[in-house]
Length: 175
Image 1 (tube, rainbow, N blue to C red):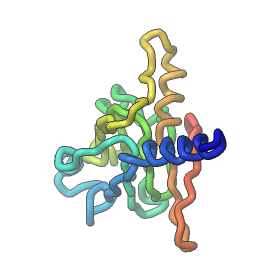
Image 2 (cartoon, rainbow, N blue to C red):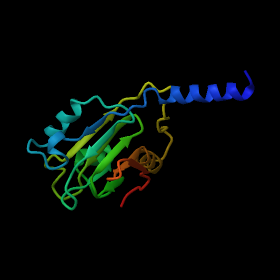
Image 3 (tube, helix red, strand yellow):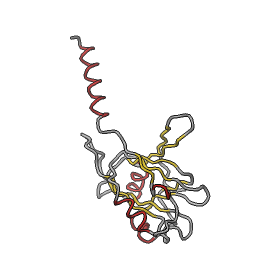
């Protein structure tokens, strides 16, 4: 075999290897309830999260009425206190989000009273069996660097009626 053939075989083998384990599961947060103030308070979304074994690259749909809800990525401290004054990022329209890094993501709604009424969820994403996991933020990083890493670890997936998904990186720190 020539060098070109060997390189081609190697490239195909690498591509196949990288595609293994990249199948993402898709879930709708809250199932039929969607993303809203839950009738059972915070326990509703906590139970939903506990019932799902999420892994890196999974895609979560957040369905809600535009202008009545939104979705905000916040710090653990802001999540615990239901402080939505300075979210890391806010999405004002429903969509699907692919989580690209291991760890816990804290999400809530910024509309007045929604978080305190239970519209918040902490989602843990376990690592995949990937041969090269994404690096975690070092302890020496500043809070702003870590915030930007978490915001960049989420990709927005806009579903269009064209029959395909377009992934737009979310690098917005806050709106």
